Amino acid sequence: MKILTAEEMGAADRLTSEEFGVSIQTLMEAAGQTVATFCQRQYADVLRVVVVCGKGNNGGDGLVAARALALAGKSVQVMLLGRRDEVKGDAAVALGRLREVLPAMVHEVVDEPGLRACLSMMGEADLLIDAVVGTGFKPPLRGLAASLREMLEGFDTPVVAVDLPSGWDANSLEQTVVGAFRANAVVTFTAPKMAHVFGHLTPSSGVFGPVVVGQIGSPAAAVASASGLTWGGSSKVLAEKPRDVNSNKGKFGHVLVIGGSYGKAGAPAMASLACLRAGAGLVTAAVPQSIVDTVTLITPELMITPLAEGPNGAVSFKNLDAAKLDALVNKISVVAVGPGLSTEGDASAFARHVVEKTTVPVVIDADALNAFGGKTHLLDGTGRVMVLTPHPGEMARLAGLTVKEVEADRIGLARRFATEHKLTLVLKGWRTLVAHPDGSIAVNTSGNPAMAKGGSGDILTGIVAAMLAQYPNDVARAVETAVYLHGLAADFAAQAMDEHTVLATDTVAHLSNAFRYRVTDGDGMTWICGLQG
Image (tube, rainbow, N blue to C red):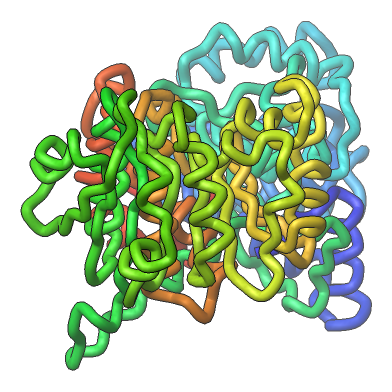
């Protein structure tokens, strides 16, 4: 699913109308009906609804939604910010149709006293719908809209935003903005805009509120994006096809997890467990001899290869004579190197040697990434599959930048690094980016603050390796799916527990929920954020 700017969304609407013969009025009708459908399902028990509408097309969507909810038996009141005769075009048609159903329920609000007169009506509502301004609006809010925003802060009534929370710039890449309406849920149309994937539009504790995309009749040919950005959750369909009934473990790959050191046995153990849970047919953990017994305890299904180690408990270069390395990677589908490896002794040189001498797909994480600090010329994915999974600190060391510089240009940096080194880069953080060698980038929107725990990166490494082992011919979607599944499993964990108490291994326990989840619901809406009820 492409991610659009406000201008690209406007162009898609015009093209849909002018080239494909679908009128703006038809699109507006479908958009409003989509909002009403979402509200009836998500807030099924509400009786009193107040819809706040502007005079433009976003208000027109809200007017259609108001009519649909009234016809469904809800008690609906409409606050129109302006006079009826100021509503023009397609929105005026929507207003006329609404007044046929609710002739006395449209309240013109033209000044501050009129706004204050509606306070009791808003306070009695079970649900508020924000249809003041949408994608085409450029902040800041002024006048009545700004006053209304301040008033809404005094209510705890849930708010569903039509297209965007009013006052939020559709092109914004910021996580938060000042001066926009609050929202508990957002319903947008055709495709997500920049703000939908990069903004924290529906703040809440634990799992974030819903941000959904409804299809309203715009053909795919009318939707064009110049950014090269897509929504990563679209790739999850890769993991939803049932397995062939005539299956065996050999069909789903053999992953070798190389890592661990004295005091860091948990990292390779967690990566290995996640790899097994994510569907790899076989998983072997190659770890220093002294931690073999600890790693083995993670699950009896895990196979173990002990590695020679130096006096400090890190892996030794003795493991890398040609015969030993060949034996280590024999019949291996994917190598994941780095979890818990440390940078002591021979460990960094060991990691670089493994990456250089193996030809199978490789996932590089943690201390294996640090091994390439100042040596990124050795990272070359030409002719092979290479996936890096750095957090901002590791990315800063790789790129020779500060963390602040990394965070200031995440998209540009990820794209440059992936294309220059011909590899796939998973730049973790708020809205993890999956940058591919061709310059395309998928933005991930699953996950929550519960993932801010030690071990989360190791879990992701295992899931990425497992997906690559199962889908070796679809690398881009395999990695995007892995990142999305990881965050989605954490969303299920945070839903079941308090976000403070979630451990990295709890996400593994919820991988089954993540695999079974479908991002598009029965009404055809795609859930960019939040979990369906």
